[in-house]
Image 1 (spheres, rainbow, N blue to C red):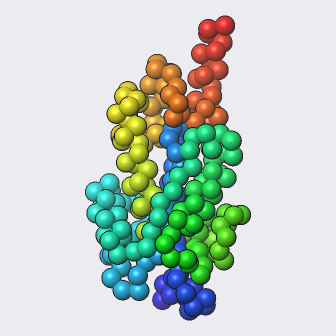
Image 2 (cartoon, rainbow, N blue to C red):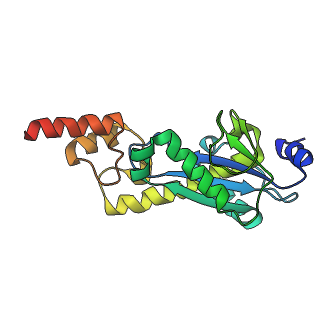
Image 3 (tube, rainbow, N blue to C red):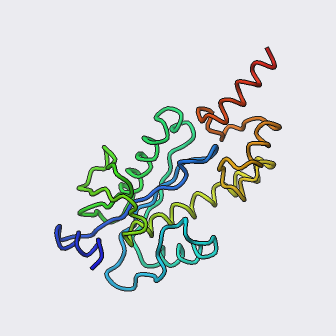
Length: 205
């Protein structure tokens, strides 16, 4: 019996899974997805998005979007700087749940904390993307949506390899950051970006 089935029997209504992508990158938004899976016809192969290839994620994302009630939302680089990445990720989760066209009776949240302003009964599940099908589906949609944003941003800001590294702190990305400087989409409060900017300011003083 799935976590969704157990939760649905307990509350007597639709169950939503929520997950986010993009806490660790040096650039770009943090993205969250909320998914209510159907009782039947759930796509096979749902798993933690990190365990899937890009092609598998794209294939499953299309199937999830075709059969489920879902929504994707973001918190911007400016909101990450203002709130910090932890609270910005929770903001994106709240936005995703609020954007659903069907109101869930309970929300299954990946992690050990429930976003304060979620507005629905919720349960935090550590490692939920490997334990809950709806959280796994949300992790796939969030990852696919964010990767697409980073591919688009890579066209606007070439040289950082965002189409390949999705903004994560790879050696090539950090090298480009040192050589090209920061863009408006870099998270300036993150240590690698902040340290490079501080060195630039000292050098130009």
